[in-house]
Image 1 (tube, rainbow, N blue to C red):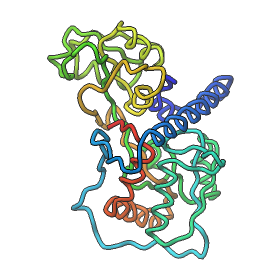
Image 2 (tube, helix red, strand yellow):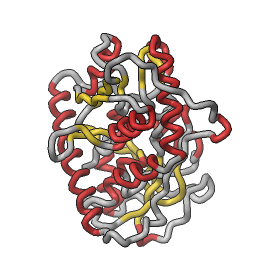
Image 3 (cartoon, rainbow, N blue to C red):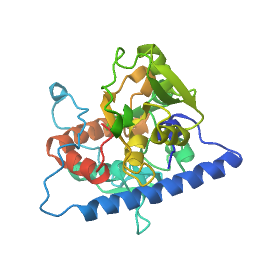
Length: 307
């Protein structure tokens, strides 16, 4: 399960035989995540307190709160569109119904706005075109917020971002990453990734060891061939708590969220003519955070936090 989630989101979907491999890997990832989620839930007793190690990110500025914004009344349901193969953000549940953090957040937003909503699953690479063609009203999926997207559509403030993280072997007693601490130390990274570019810029004296994919880098870390691995935090969270890691490794240091390298994150996407709906969604996201629903959903779908 070495798929780099951030690379799948930030790059276009393959269109030849790579597309078959791409979708197969996403299905495998979905099944693995559901198994992990089930195992975590079974391991926790109802009386167990929330693990203090689970860090819940806060993307909202309390000073930005304004008057409550109501959703425009159109006389019909607001149609959300998502993809069903990208856990934990959006995937098909055991009953085949779309679920995941982004999907359940959309449902919570609809409750705050007291509007009827529907959720339809579509292939990831068709979502924006379907939105432009008015086959739906809102995209709730891991579509990165970029200048290109903003030129065509409106989007809410981010409700999730892609943290970069270092992980290291547990048995080495390695120092937390810093420009000084990593000088001369071996760090695994995926060749050509944003993480490689960031490491070059801010940890110039680290000894970079590049790999063609994240799975190979993870295996090298587990074997002790590199001391650290720097990659997408969500992919690493799933790997650290899966069977493949065998408990070898753990996070080292904090998260890195620089927009220039790791993007702005993801938000709900609407058409430009639906500005009133976009404002209402933004306001509802703030309320979902304020009343604790965001934290509840985050803990449900991120039992192992990437932050």
